Image (cartoon, rainbow, N blue to C red; front, side, top):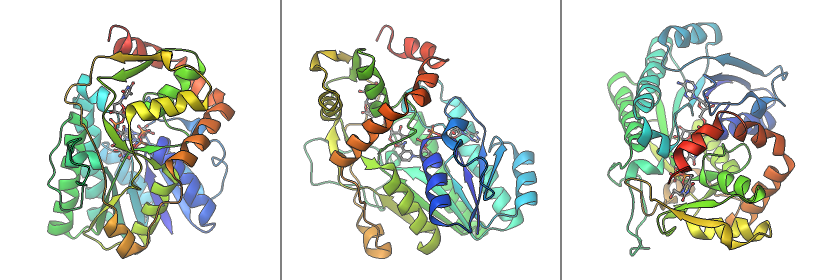
Length: 339
Ligand code: NAD
Ligand code: TDX
């Protein structure tokens, strides 16, 4: 089996590359990544010489380059992780989100039509469903929940999902879509809540909590997301959407306090800062479908996963210190300097 993994130098794509190469020693992985600010070859350092691994530095919106890669590799499966993924950046500059997340998806789908494919899998997000109110803990996102987006990021991801559905219905591109809740774990870029807080606690820097910190996210350890996608590409039904989540809801404040306590620091590091524009209140996934149809269950609880994650950041300081000492420093100043 030959799998093209787009966005494989990023957080979840990188974890998926490691997961597949470890699990299937006869599978070939073709990693396609533009190496934007979020892509990092250090994440792939341990597999770059593996004979089952190949890398193409390609923008998924570059039709010519994508077609050329298809002609050379003739892949069986595409798993599309490549995306602009940070909500805050989408509020600053929506355009690149449309180019990569929408046009990039269309180019990949066109390549699948032109060259044929066994499966196209779109890695989507629970953010396409919008948010849930805090006073209705009985409500969850199901696959039938209407798309209702809040940020340019989620609007671009929902648009891509609609295109995938259209290419399935109109052109019979054999596709599946997964919509996962917030991931955390190794190789998570430090602009996101959990790695940002770990890095700041370790450097005794202020911990910027948006608004009141009461917003709720449903956290999934990244390896559990990888195992779900593995099941979907092998056993999932084409044309279907699968929600992925493990009922690990936490307020942002709970997450930040857990990190502070694990690292033995003081809650005085917390600084409440201006809220995110259009900030979604609560995400919560109902994973009944993927459990009952494909037998998927997560294996890592939040309490275990956050300990493993903190340990990984302690053991791999050079990975994230290289990032935060580079262009990230000016990003941080721009986003948080006068917030
Ligand atoms: P990430 O930002 O860490 O990685 C994205 C990767 O895509 C990077 O390696 C980047 O270089 C690459 N990329 C960006 N633009 C590209 C382009 N035009 N062409 C080729 N490569 C490009 O993102 P992530 O957190 O790993 O998310 C991966 C996917 O999972 C995204 O589609 C995201 O929407 C989805 N998702 C993420 C989460 C989460 O909690 N992080 C949850 C649900 C779904
Ligand atoms: O400095 C911060 N302070 C803060 O309070 C940051 C970076 C975030 N937050 C809050 C905003 C959110 O309520 O923490 C929560 C999580 O924020 P992010 O890590 O930016 O994630 P989120 O906006 O929930 O989106 C993530 O999950 C869904 C991913 O980045 C998306 O790619 C995925 O689709």
